[in-house]
Image (cartoon, rainbow, N blue to C red; front, side):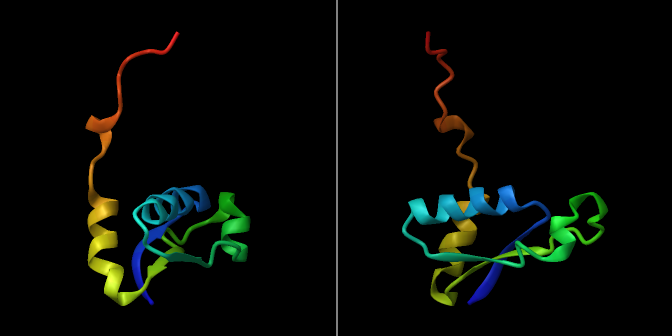
Length: 79
């Protein structure tokens, strides 16, 4: 397993993990429940939550996480 991203907040890591899972890439969130993150107000170690994937998936995972999907969002308002 290799680290492909680091996050300061658990929800950011879970969003990235969900994006990878949607593409069929298995990932693991490490250090999510460390004491530093449980006391988020005092978190002075940015990037202490790690997202890991198998080494063979690392390049694809980084590409997915670095892709801007904002143009895929429909701007129409649903009534």
